Image (tube, rainbow, N blue to C red; front, side, top):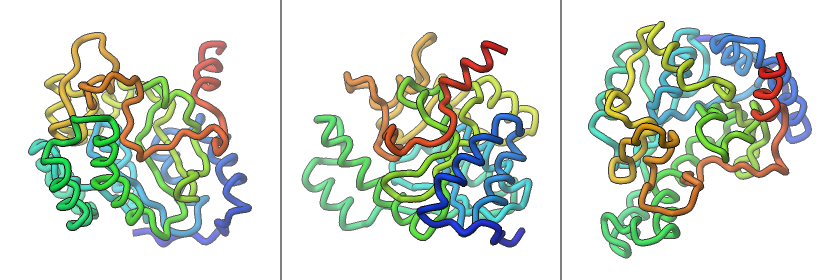
Length: 267
């Protein structure tokens, strides 16, 4: 495993500069080089959070294939699909690496279920977000504690809300670099990468599950539906997010996905 570089001192004053440098160079790099560039330019711990979707498997492959000093972490909510746990095991076996798991705090889960019921998240958007907070957001806080940078598998194409996401920004909640190396990739490009490299993937994707989260909160999507239509499908609001990803424009840095798409079209 490569040692962590010390070329950049990551403090509050330097976050903007690092984000701008990464954003400026990402478009010309392939995925392997994008991930390597993140590791090279960022001093201190770098964390990648995976939910074992297609995008996450592609990023995991680039990290493990490059033997990079990046901590690969998953949030085990306790409500994942059996297929997701199976893929987790297959991925560890494929790369001979462990994926660190963070689980919800036991007493918080017990208290939430006692108050709302095991599937009480369907009663209201507020209740669902409360469940996501206990099962995802609090464990994420622990996953990112002490980290300098956070890598995600977000893509601009996934939703209208994510279309405004930059390659690199300062995460307002965790005060670290948030990096999205697959931002400008289409789903077809991700799928092609997974097939090209023989990367294990969740078999639910073959059954119409384009975005996979907790089992009771995810369904397959019909042809023509948006990728994230199967997440919390009983809710009427258009935003299909659990709260892990903030999209505050005031903290965005670097090139936006919309400007990148426009540049591609003009070219």
